[in-house]
Each structure stands twice: as C-alpha cells, then as structure tokens.
Image (cartoon, rainbow, N blue to C red; front, side):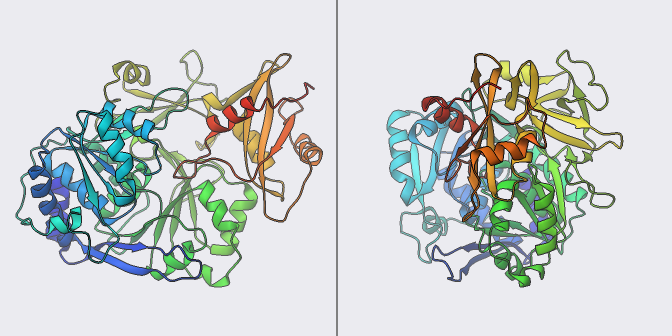
Length: 527
C-alpha cells in the first residue's frame, strides 16, 4: 500500500469523521485562539485530489521534487499527500532557514516547485534567482478566512476533486528529509511510501492507538517526529490530529484539554518550558493517556511532570533514518523513563564497540539498528552513496549514538558519539555532565562543550541558563558538580547565558555554542 491508497482507504472507511483540527494560536498573551479549520477524512482526500490537479497544471509529475517551506497548517498536510498521490517527492524545510541554507537544500534536492507563505516569498525568490531548476514559487495563505486570489488555497477550489490515480509503488521515494548538518552539509534521508507506513504502524501498535484517540501536534510538520509518530500513526489507526500552528508553553495544556487530546509527543526542551510555567491545578484535568518524549529529563523534572500534570510519560529513541522509534518504554509494563526503553516493532538493536564487536554488558556502545532499507529503515541518503555505505552496513544502520544496556534489557542513552569529550585520556559524556548540572535548582537548561586544552586534551565547559530570578555563582555550581562527579568529569568553567540556540524542535545547537566559545576564546584552568 502507498500513501495515496492508505488515505483513500481511510476516507472510504471513516468518511465524515474529523481527521485534522487546526488552530492558529494568537500572539497576544491571554487571548483565546479560534478553530480555523476542520478536515474530515473525506474532506482531506478530496482536497488532495484537487491539489493533484493543481500541481500537475504547474508541471509537477512523477519523481519531481516539491519544496514545502510552510509552517504548521492544513495546506502542508494536503500538499504532502498530494505530492505522494502524484508520485512526486516532498522536501520540507524550516521556515527559519536562511537563503544560503535553502539554496543548498533546494539545489541538492533538485526541487522544481516551492510553496511558501507571503512572509517568506522574498527568501524563496532569492533562492529562485540562484537556482535555474527552481521553476516556480507559489504563495500560500493558510491563515486567511478569504485567501488572496493568487494563493494556493484560493486557486485550489477551481479544480475538481475527481480521483487522481497514483503511479507510485510502496518502494518509491515519497519524501527527502534533510538532517541538520553541524560539521558537514545536511544529508537527505530518502523516505519511501513503505517507510511512512512502517513508522506510523510502529507507533500506533506500541501505544495501542485507536479510533477514539486524538494526537496533539505542536512540533513542526517539516520534522520527522510530527510526520512519522503523530500524523501517520493517527491516519493508520483512524484517529484524529489536533494541529497547532506552533508550540506555546503557556497554552500547551489549555489547548490539549480544549481539544480532548489523548496522546502527545514532545522533546525535553519544550517540556522544560512547560514546567517553567506557573502551576495551574486544572491542568491535571487532561485526557492524556501517554506522552511520548525524547531526550532525557532529570529525575526531579520527571517527578514534577507527574505531580503537576499526571500525564504518563514514555521515553523513546529514534532518528529520521530509523523511521519508527526502535526503542521505547513499554505502554504496559515497567516504564523506566530515565532510559529509552527496549526494542519495539520488530526492530533488532545491538551495541557495538569501536572495533565493530558487540559491546560488553554494561559498557557503552554505538547503537546499531537492523532493518530493511526502504521499509523499516531509510533506503539511503539522497545523492550521497558514500554516506549511505558508511551508515548502512550488512543491513545494520550505524547511528552514531551510544547507549548502555542494563541487565533487564533497557537501553540508557549516553550521548552522540561526537558529543563525547576526551579529558585526560578518559571519555566523558557531555550528556551525563549536563544531567548533573541540571539537577541544581537554579539551572533551567545547559549545554556541556569540550574545548581544546593543551594539557588535558579537552576542557569541559558548561554553558548555563538560569531560572528567572535564581542565582548561583560559577564556583558554587562547579562545587555542586564536583560533589556528584569524578574530578575529571566535572566542568572546569561555567559560562552563563540568557538563552541557548535551538533548532525548531528544541534541540540545542551545540556547534553554534562551540563556535561562539572559540571566537570568544573561552578557556578553563587545567586541574
């Protein structure tokens, strides 16, 4: 089954049942948003057919790449599935990306058409001037009750909703998802129709998603999490999706309760932002039966979340390349949310050392995932055969992440291999040091960076953001860490900042922090 067949099947099966409920949240604090649009399964299928006729009129055909440079909105979902039904390929991008970043992504992907909102037309226009193959940039007006006459939404209604036959096989590419590049150019993960279905099915089965469930989606649709885990699982299960235009920490639980959501997906950084909001007892009156999350929270944060919201947490681990999450804490059974759980969905996971041999029990090793390229793991990197060969070897995907497996089979995430710091000949996990720094009550968030040290290989520098109104000195925080870590693991320097640079899904951009520290010649005494 391809994506087009899946949508048509669910439209026939569920008809007028709401699939997508969309809200654009107000910018003003205290203002109430309005429900902008509801699309039933049948509505979505019809709109996708209209979009196929429209896109074909613009010259888009099977195998062509279309760029969606869009915020969260119904148009994104319609165009995603319309591209799939045409046999074309979606390439989504972050609306905050610069011209230089976009020129690379659009050029490398050979994007033929781009769709974006009015505020980003100038950016895409500059890209078009630099790229001959980008033939057309089309404006969308997703938030207007009466869209502009030349906008995608206004033009769409002029086309019929007659069925469009999909020429794609399940093994054909449906999307190119570019991973963020820190030390090299971004790599384009090739996602097939079968990949999307496998990802959605893995999550739907793991959390026992049913037709009565509603996914709460606040993460950006251009990211794999919102596509794989939330939208695809809901479509496969016949559930529904409440889509917000953006994440808002202050409105998170109000909107979640208003829309009757039962399942959500988050990262640690936005969860910390939610926890930083004033307590409201009514927020415990939510219908969330499971909140999937990635990236570690401290034990104190886990306890605080449970006390304040009572929304059961379930930590998992996955990558854009793995499609579904290979590791997740069990829905039924013991959840150890300080770990990323156990293998699920038929994935086989192994830890290997630097020689490629199986890592000794209780020792850190690189996470490798056994899968079928183009089905349960990516088919490869677009126009990058060497990176594909380096990453997928004998059916195993080498992730670059390290973990430790305990005696009960739970995996504890250690760090990205590139985030290991070499200190006096010892490997130090930046993530483990961060977890200790975050235990100090004055610390809101932090990033631990290794910087060159002539005597000790690398110095450990913690860049810290404090809770509003809280204070702690550099010496006090170093002393706090030294009481919980071996001396060679404790930070030698603390740098206080007002904020940390992050990606659209809240991942801290350590390469930007490291570059800034190097430019400012931050040093630490060797101890």
